[in-house]
Length: 229
Image (cartoon, rainbow, N blue to C red; front, side):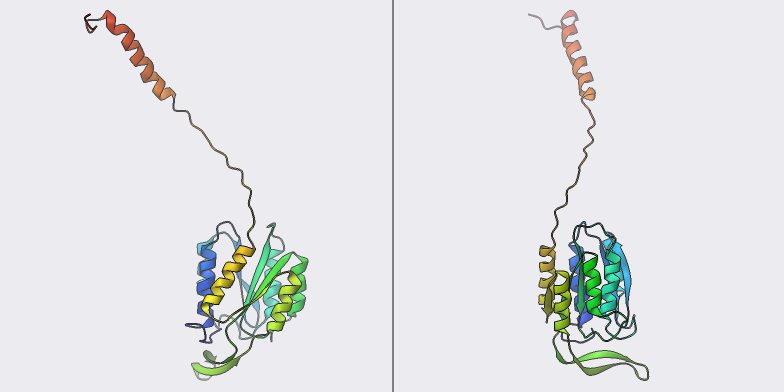
């Protein structure tokens, strides 16, 4: 995710688009699962979007051992969503690589997600080819190298198809933003709400002065302030 075909790199571009997507939510519980060699919950399902955005901002390359454990990430997401009572349960799986780590096969994880009613939208981000990216070399520290990137589109399509979702390819920032907008449109759910209104009667505060004015009008003809004919 440190390849620079998306600016300034794939991870930063994905975080920016995801932050905009979260900013447009109102009543959706959203969680965040990050993965490399393993997958773990960075933020559980929540309606507290400012907290979620902080967890997103604190997700960085090197947080987990290097690798691509797509199956572990998907299984973790399905486990988080399985007890949700939401009518629509979706997971958006975004990756720029090929599954090469983890104890759970991605297609097995897809079946797990389907069994608990989770629809998975998969996104392959970035272009295939040779790009410059930053690596953390144990001997020389962080340095820029040229590496060849590859995305397993066949696997991502099979995961999406197995769960009733769709596969998307984002080769630039605009395409990634458009994908999240389309997912938002596809997953709209009507929400029925009961609204209670509390009324407070203030008419008594107006009746008292009105009665006083009426009484004054009836009494004035009997006083020295009456109007002469």
